[in-house]
Image (cartoon, rainbow, N blue to C red; front, side, top):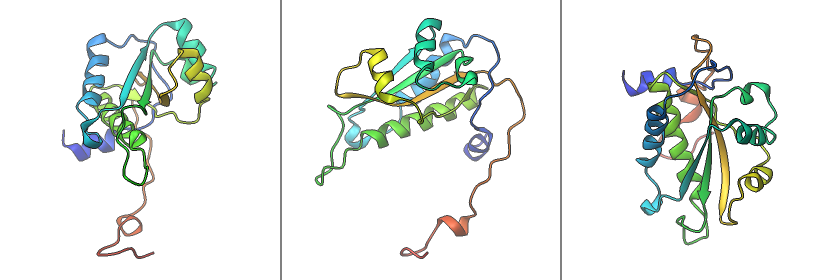
Length: 172
């Protein structure tokens, strides 16, 4: 499958089969993140793989959606601000590096027939407390992972090329 075909195949899955995700596949998803680029190659990311039902239920309190509770795996994606590269003007690239890793994971999962949904609208402070993370670690996103319950890929509306590009300078 070409990269463009894979990008078209990937969508936000909110309905998972009640099926265990093989450890080897979980580790392949994490391997894709491990291989992702980061500013100055500092790699300021950490992944907490949650399969324990009790812990998943606690984390689900930070994003109370019934479909989220049904995901067999939740990857808690953290950024390590103590080890991220900061630009001269102070811009911290931790979130950017973590976002690249998440994108790699979502595409790797889709390539293996798994589904994901990038969750950012959760109570990050509560999740941080539940996991007992140190101050320098930030929970950036939650990534539920599992086999999609429905085979159909929903329509994705995307802006046209004319709406997203300018040549040789910005043009509104």
